[in-house]
Length: 409
Ligand code: ASP
Ligand code: MG
Image (tube, rainbow, N blue to C red; front, side, top):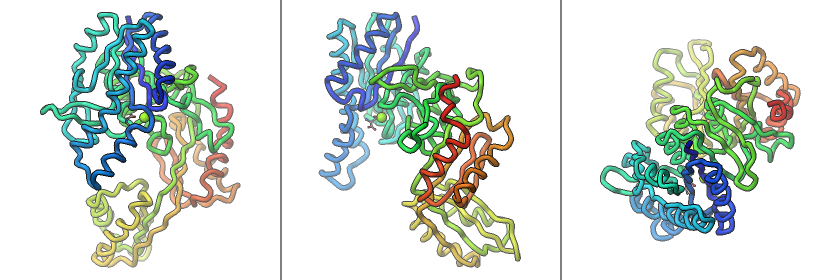
């Protein structure tokens, strides 16, 4: 008998009615002969409510107490979910993270899973029961409660699926899959039937918010097929899997966009070895994440170096670089906010020429100015004025004919 892991997010367990409704879905899988492990999030809004409670107590709640507090959200849901299954005459047993146990490191509020002991869950499954496991929480080696970071239940589900060698890990959410673009921006956006782990990682890193990125990394590492589907109307959803399992690769899988990017340019830097290090070293020491980096070809023995950061980090970045500019005897450092990054993603890029040309031509035809370009093997990203973000996404979606994408497979 195969094991499946089904994860239900906050909106899917947001009320008693929702829990009753999705538990019927689990009952169906059990009656079809699957051994089911259910992983749940806190009821929607609950984690935020708990965060607000702590913040009203103190401006800087300690990480340890935060984890103890936030883990209660999921504990409520596992018990209610098990009761809902029992109501349907499906034997079920709830597990907190420490009852499993799901062992993590000690980094409170963003712990990493180091080990899952599956014996207790297997015993429950073998006794013909459903195991209902609290997502997002674990326990460290000294029995402290830890949490995995916001959205961490996805990671719990995938890690359990890997540890239990499950046939599939299903992530039930409020959308019915991964789309070729944000359907709120592009009317013709279509559901992608199958996508590779690599593409999904690029999509999540470039603005598509379907799943916690670590969950996808985990699934990829252990080759667990992941399915994202709606808990309201369960359909085929989107399967995230390895490249070999996808017969016909389209050129492009999707278009993503991120707002709130800023660019920093250091002008007139003497062109000599160690420049990139002297500029980007202090930025990384200040814990600022750098995304795209461009260094121009030097002229007159000087060069310009441009990089992008999150808009919220722009001020700090400029402050950090002011003394560096003096030290290096560079001309100046300037910042520019209000950028958006648009990415075109697809493993098919590896075997098809001309993707970049299609992209740049389509943007040019709309008079959208490209500021920075960066590429990877399966992604081309450009930054543009934030004002044109939606237009750019729509333009590229139709330039690559993605409306037809979902219908083909
Ligand atoms: N309840 C946690 C959160 O809201 C974990 C999760 O939902 O995955 O972030
Ligand atoms: Mg969630």
